[in-house]
Image (cartoon, rainbow, N blue to C red; front, side, top):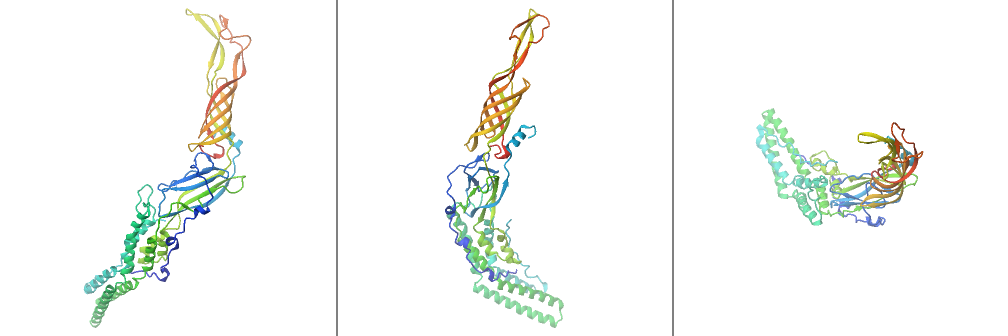
Length: 506
């Protein structure tokens, strides 16, 4: 097998962010924020907190905030292997909706994979029938080289580091070090890795083994030279071809011996990085708040990303800084694919004014009936004896669209409640006329329940007619009626239609 030439560029340097992690100074730069409740997904919020579950991160819907309110982001069950940052991504302007246009429309009918690379094996000595003894000796030398090769000895430790650079699968129980909740657990994970890397970076200097390798190579060189001379004298082309191949393998073996120290600086960098690994605090480094910015003439939609940085990444990237197309490069290239920051969730926050006018659609139920009058026959003993004025009482349900003016709002169990002054317009199927409602409405989430004054039209008797008045016998006309305005108590139930989509089902 051929070993890479790592070069002096990978000389051992201490990775500052791993060996000397910056103290968590976030609290020094964060503005004081009160210990406020979690943000509601269905309301226009005051100061509130977004809590992200690290073991099951879910991108929340757009959070709607009042002007100058502050969103604070915190992490639940953080991993001790990563540092967290809240990074701004974009801010866009959203024009405020035209309240009366939306109100009218509401009333209308139409509403980086990481992989663990195994140590690639060289093609090894050829099995040459004519020189099988020499080929076997070269195979034995190959095994001896591998016994002190740093990359071969460190393969298991490197594989575990690569695995630690990959975040755990969501929903599956994480393995150490991701499952660690204290420093003792992380120490238990890193100790065998550090010991393995230390052994790998020292074993290649074993003098006795190196001397034995050099002696065996020299002995094989003599055998190849002797057989080559005999083949030249005998003019044996097949043997000369075999010897040329064996000489190539000899050159490969010598190159492997020479390359043994090349990977040591990278492995030492990993060793120091893992050995110096300390648990993170789980708090967001730096800014953890989202604030309103810009002018007050438009709404502002901000997008932020909660990112993490694996605390092993700086040392891993340092160790594999050179992307060499060789066996050593393949053995370590997997850890170089870990980028500096990886996203956890994207947070979208819109800052806007409270909507003072909102629409809803539903039903109004008057407590008192509508009246209608007609001539009705009376009978006795199976015969019609006369006619009377009959009054019919009809209790109706009035489909209605409402306009709501906000008077007060508050949070009830992380859900928005509000009181509105409400006016509505609808159609009364009993009187076949327009109906109006005016009153107070309580709203919880999307549901509104109110007490209204129903203002509508109703029929009444005129011309001196009264209910149950006898009309005589035979065919008689209906009594004379007219319509008049009535005022009666009613209740209403409706579903809110927030203007401009400011709060969804808030």
